[in-house]
Length: 76
Image (cartoon, rainbow, N blue to C red; front, top):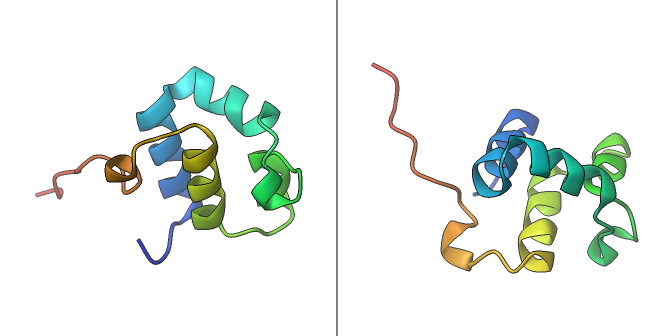
């Protein structure tokens, strides 16, 4: 997972936490690893989505095997 686009970030968030709760986490969860910013604040300030996603995973105790997200079958 070298690069995470913004759309991938939100897909990962929604898959892990659900569409509604992922938005709450993004706006309310304070991430010390990101200077005390929320995910939304960090995104707005230009922080890479990958870095934010990993900070959320660590803070929320997401098991490392789920940090890459679920497998998505390629479109035909």
